[in-house]
Every structure is written in structure tokens, then in C-alpha cells.
Image (tube, rainbow, N blue to C red):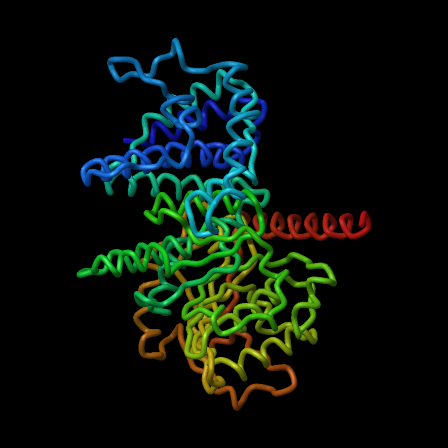
Length: 486
């Protein structure tokens, strides 16, 4: 029902001079969807209050409500284009009045876990990029057609929004870092088995895919009480995100999945000294795919006992520290982490093995992450007891993965089934840590069953890997330029 609407919105944004990529389309769609959702939420709460004989205090002042500036209606209930703003008037209202008003909510809100605060953060971080007020009017008219009234409508919208995030990753640039394949996330959730009442955390949440999938997993369980549902809304899902665009998309993604006021904080997680993490700050479950290939500045590295510029290695230290005793984690990381011989890699593997039970390593094939040729593994560990044995599983879907042939849930079904009992097979085996070299702590994936032969990569996979290396080089050069400029 809504798919064509989303396509039409993208077609209009594609024609606008201010929107140049899939990232821009998603960002601009997001702030309009947010305001449309907020209008629906306010109408619903006002109706409930009226039925209870109570008055409802709106979040937004009358002139900034969707029904006033975006979609004023005539007596027939249709958008009244005689009174609706358009052209330069619409663009100027949005840029000079609407956005400054909404950004001010961050200072006026009673606390960070309120919808008011999220409004302020979202509109303090992004700006309207649609240069033509006529294009903006056309997009608003399409967004106005979308409805959030029923669960099926919200489900369809969330599904379409996920597709936009996936397309954004496929578009290249830095979009890929916002999208982790959902079948892989669902498998990670099944293994970590979060329960209602536990706090779930992603310190590099991007588009909040892990938190959204965990919410879907827990909220679909039968027999949930009103108290359970309230716990899922307010006390379960926590995230941090550094980049403005990812933060906005993550907020919108969680809202579309059914979480009214997402507990996502816009901050650089690595700017926090891990020695300041107290027990009250820790979580029972951590799910994450932290960015890798980045280079953090020296002052950020000072926050960690194992000093390194590699972003993913700093995040792994943060996650180990932020996990409660007995807590479970599933973290995606480059497979070279298992074998690198630099001091930071060796020290980090030793820390992981001695402070946690690294019980499972899932070896993912090339092409798992569309648009990135780098190979990854997923580390599954529990906090509080040292590692005795590591169970490895070498994922092999039996085909080359790519944009047109992505990973699916069936590909991971055997992994989830065998992992439950740490069963051995042609694709899985166990390594005793007592036999690991104590000098290098090398944990490389080496299938003793002969399943570890290297398969020739397809031309598409080679091109993807070259593109990923180019991106890493560009980011490293950008960081060097920033350092020189300081």
C-alpha cells in the first residue's frame, strides 16, 4: 500500500538540487515521517484523554502542528491547497521558523527520555536540504497519505523504512555502516537470548537495527502483560550514536517499530573513559557491529587501557567493560582481529579470553555485508569467567553472496541449531584455549575438517573489497587532514 508512495517521494527528491544521494533521500524522508508520526501520536493521545474526560496538553504549539502548516484541511477533509504553504513561502517557513522552534525542545524538555527531548535532538542535528519549496510541497502531500493508526500500517512502514536503510547501504559512500544484514542480527539475538527485564545495549547503534530486531523478538512473545510492554517501551533498549544522520535514522527506525521515545543518545561512545563505567551503567545484553577501519585521536585512545587507533578495538574494550557479570554479548568484528600480531590485537585477545567466556565464533563469508568485501566474524561471549573452549562455526551458504543474492534466515538456521549444543560437524569444531599459543593468543579460523579451503572470489566480491579499501583509505586521509588542521 505504501511502497509506491515511498518510491514517489524518492523520485521527487532525486530531482531536487539539494538531495544528491540515497543518504539524503532517507534523511529528508525521516524528518517528515517523524513530524507526521508525532501528529498521529498527539491525535491518538488527545482522543484517549477525551474519552477519559481529561484534557490533553499538546507538545507542539498550534502553528507548528502538521495539520496547520503541512496539511491544512477543507470542509471535505482534503488538503486545502488554497491555504497550504508552498514554494518559497513553505521552504522559508521550514528553514527559519519550524526547525529553530523544534530544535529548541532539547533545552525545554524535562529529561532526555521524553519525546520532547528527541524532537529537540533530531531537529538540532539535521537541516532541510530540499531547495525547491514546490518539491517540498509534493513530498509533504505524499507523506500526508501515510497512516500510523494500526499495527499493520506501522509494520508495513517499518518494513519499507528498513528497505530504505538497506538501499542506503547499497548506494555506497558511508551508507553501508548503517546496515547490518537482518538475518545475521536475528541469529545473534537467538544465541544471546535476551529476556524481558534485561537491558539491551548497542554503543554504535547506527540505524538501530539490533535494537529494533530485539524489540520485535521480545514484543512478539505470547502472554505479555501491560507491565512487560511498558518495560519494553522504557527500560529495555539503549543506544549511543556519534553521527547525526545515523542518529536521526535510528530514532525514526525505532519509532516505526513501535518504541515511542527511544533511549538513544547522540554522543561519541569512545569519548567516555571506560574506568568511569559503574555497575549501574552496565547491561545484561550487548549487540553491536561497531565501525572498523577508523582511526581515533590520541586523546580518545587515552580512555582505554589498551591504546590503539583502531575504532573497533576500542569499542570491544568498551563493550567488555559495559557488560554486567553474567551478561552476554555478540559483536561483529573484522576476522583479522583473531590473528593480527600487533600489541593491541594480542593484548585485546588475551583480555577477552581471561575476563570473558568467548564460547562461540561465527565465521562469516565474503559478501555478508553488501558493498564491503572485508571478511568478518561474530564474537559471542559471557562476562565473568575465563574461556576454556571456543566453538567455531564456518558459515557457508553454498553460493556467492552479493547485493542480488543476500544472506537469509535459512542460511543461519544450522548455525543457531548446532550452537545450542556446541555440536561438532563438517562446519563446526572446538578449540581448547589451553592449546593456544600464550605469546600470540592466535584464534584464527582453521577448520580441521577440511572445510576451510579458500574459494576463489567472484569479480563482484573483488570490486567490493577494493571499494571498501578505498573507503578506508579516504577516511584515514580525512582523519590525518583533520589532525593537521587542529
